[in-house]
Image 1 (spheres, rainbow, N blue to C red):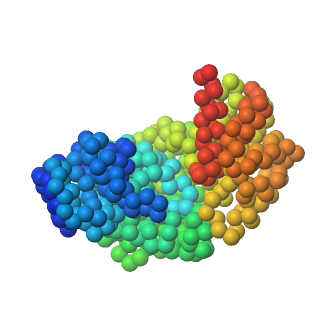
Image 2: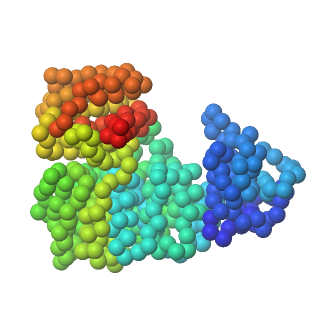
Image 3: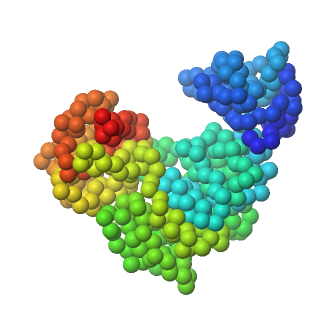
Length: 454
């Protein structure tokens, strides 16, 4: 919150100062009293289970400089307390206020799968010519995005924001706060179909990123996606496509895999640039082409952008590869959908190994009534592309029956799963771990990786 004071929070929110000094400077926004630091503005959010208003005192005692409140009408304290009608909406108003003060261009990335990886690749490509701000972690929601906007500094020259959504109308709210200059949509899958009902509804929701796109902005679409490849942006915006198809303005050609990692030629008009990635899987070709397209549109040398992409090694929990006692471990446990599950299995299939290939697959969540079918289709794919052993975790994944050896573990039995893996794995093996974040499969991956140090 560069150069922001309580007075400006009052202006942004229309709130009322109950006590304290309106000249008090603020450093950051905190919504967690346990991690509040000196100079923070504490925003107590009201959730389904917990109302954080009861932790205001704890946050202030930890060093927070001020607090919002929607429950108090009078207060006598040395700290500023700001009365607002709704703390979540007030937080969003602060985010909008900060966005209006920014002059740098912002790129927004959304989609069903690959948002974070594409965000990181776009940021890497742009860093060949700019000082780049990027969304930290997974702060891409109605709460996280406003906080992200407050963290952009005057030294940043361009920003890359991840815009997430899980419910109807959510992306419109986020997009209007972010006011991006260029919007990237990676694909339309079935993630969150439980809440949105159909892929057509998901597509409409993803396209609502245009609700906050600045006048004259660019909508950059995955031209290989069956739904996005025929979409045109609304009037007043420019539409461009990236991918491998002939319809794409930014296209990958001469594609090959070298050690499981994509190598190709990026074609951007008359320009042809060789690209060699360090992340595994063909699906990263489209992520890289999105990044190169954004870099080119902002005037960054494609050769330099490609060089930066060649140094990108992945993001925590997303197909990161480790070695432990001769065993290759692919940690792809951050989240899972049918598209990303198949992409991860294709990576496993592509790896050359002197031992066995093992897949550890946990439930894919938020797939609604069709969840069983989507999990069975993973099993169908595995029967056509067999691996040596399959381990499944959770009720939904129990229907993934593939291979001669398929062991199932109940949801939560992380110790049992880890114990069996530790006993089974041997030098030369390659093991993939993939599942929705809520299944906590990442804890198993972490234990396998850390055993290398023991």
